[in-house]
Image 1 (cartoon, helix red, strand yellow):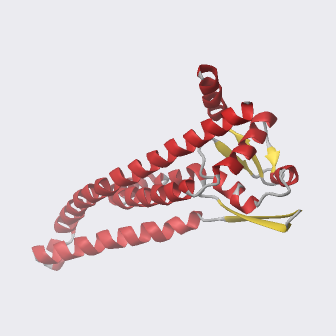
Image 2 (cartoon, helix red, strand yellow; image 1 turned 90 degrees about the vertical axis):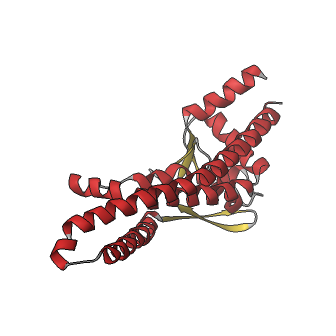
Image 3 (cartoon, one colour; image 1 turned 135 degrees about the horizontal axis):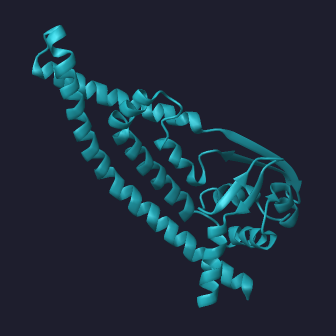
Amino acid sequence: MAKKKLGRWFADYIDRSTKSCRIGSIVLVPLSLIVAWLTYWIIWVTLWIGFRPLFDLSNDAVGYLSYLFLAVMFTWRFLRGSEFEEEYRFSGENETGTVTLNFSSTTGNGWVLLFDSGAAHGFVKVIALLYLTAPRILGLALMLHHKANRLKQMDVPACSRVIGMLMRAQGRVPVEKIADEFPEADLSQIIPPLGDVDGVVFLEKDGRGLTLAPRFIEGFDEWAAES
């Protein structure tokens, strides 16, 4: 009975998460265009004040340069986003043979890295905030769109079995132990998708492992108490 309850709750949780990602991606696209339009005029005024007198530029030239600068900002932002794609590989054995899993550091809540200007100087951070906000918003919209697609394709019943194991453990569970617990399962279809579930935490100390955030467990407990 407890397994069925967890299965129903987790299916509903994934459905709500998918819808939230869809709505977020839809809302953020027009928002990024509005911010891009405002950014264009910020760039235009900056070039008009700082460079037009020096190079005797026309207003049209300032406009073209502003478009070019904005395009460079979008391109640089998306190319830089690939820096956060770090792969981790786990290999093990189960009944189906060798199991190889690939993980990315941008799973789960990793999208917040798009809003991190790093350890740059304070002035650089201000410039990044002004000129890179629109690309970041559009990047977030795309990431939410892809995340929604992955959540939609998730094998929810199989993943809920792993969630149940993590619930019972109340702590870190090594990937190897999950492989031993479900020897017949295709872990490549179960473990990596969990990285998109807010509340599932991937740990790297002493080998790759998984655990659940307290708020995730509390959410299920509250639902179970009411149902």
